[in-house]
Length: 432
Image (cartoon, rainbow, N blue to C red):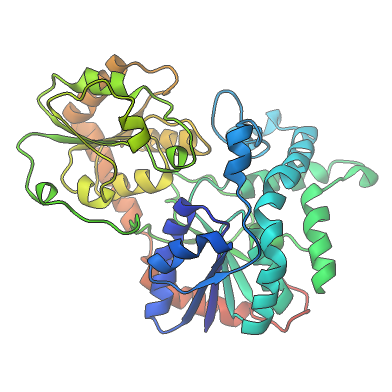
């Protein structure tokens, strides 16, 4: 079959999608990966065939000028209105969801999708994919799939804040007077449905099914959606394992990694790196800190027990470690969990706090607020991680839950059946 992957140009999202694309390709299927033209190099560097669509438009350029553009709380976490995934039902209001959706359609979703839609639909009409796999905010993928009758799934690699928010929205919309049920998402995506000759349905927002990389013990799912569990496979792009990393460490090794996305887009770490390194400097451990070069230049000193690198393949590094300190980005968190390692998380952005809380609930790690934590707090928490057998046992349990999920190769047959069942003639009404 022909499988079209698509995502707006966000590197961390692409890296999480690549293993499934490889699995389908090595199973003999034709695979293409579509994104904006500037992202072509990232796709081809991973050995996949790129399809440049639309024009380049960078959400991060807007965020660099206005960090509050997406409406994130000053307490961090998920942007509005998707932060309702963290709230009890009784605190969620119709007005908050309605207004939040209206803001995000204009600020976020149009910015990421409008530049791609027309070209993506044109490519899909010419290439006729059987299945489209789209990143959960790349609604252009769902539009293109519906326009040509292809089966389509979201590939989810974080808390399903989008599905949960939509579930609450539909619940509260049904309670409103019929003339007051404003639906910004349906109005926006419905316009594309009319343009390309199909009926609007919820599958344009949440897919016909959802392939989910997050183990259920960490996830927050929406009722009524079809979730297909998939095991996370670490992939961080081209990498080299240096000779020193291939040798067993002489002391307990701890990795410190605070992510690539924020600094790669001109931001700063939420925690004081110098304070953290200083606090760990007299411990009988080896610290390996992967720190962006811009942040390295801010360091006044590097303790004797610390090795600083701009980048190391995290899976290779984690394999030599006793614990990992990190920012709770899903790729880092999942790579650490797959190695059965205790983790100290310092989450701030997006769904990091929710994922970190899930790790703590699973008994696999500890959580600190990076805006409040001192180096001494990090030191104390790390010493607990290294000495508490219960946390190591919890980490082993989380690893086992992740390994219980089907690997990408095993997912291929599921997607083959799904595509055969859901593929329909272009223009026919979807049953999703």
